[in-house]
Image (cartoon, rainbow, N blue to C red):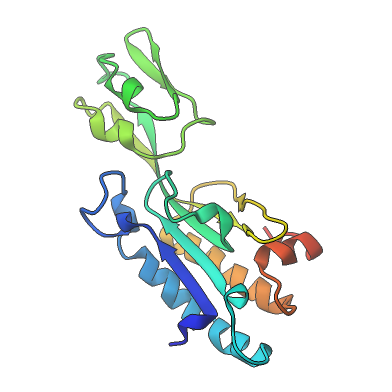
Length: 204
């Protein structure tokens, strides 16, 4: 294994019981990200294409966040994964207690007569409302990963572009494989995914 060619950053929520906000689907995913990078051929590719010592700016960087708080900074790396659990309301079970309204950090839930409404464009899929509902009136309808590509810091920083949809673990790893191949196909010294996207476009 050649860890200097890449860096996989993960928040503490990837480990069971370490963070109250962490979603369980993330357990073991960081290891799967590492395996995918290793198996892609990237470590050997970078070693063959960098003369001298491999430095920090050469590395491919990935981040895994167990919730929408993004403590592992998934918005500013080559590819970031944010665990998400989007809710749907079962109106026949909702008693309008308001616990989910108060629990939502993004004000995505509003009272609607006896029940509630969820603003899909505002909800970040943190799952807090699902966990506080004692009536089981909020259930996950879409669970997986938000995926962001092309984030970077440096002289011209940019936030990663969020891809449309929610990705299963297998689909998210597929995006990672495609991203790595895209970088290798368009590689130039010192250019990360975000810089390549600025120069040749986005493959997604």
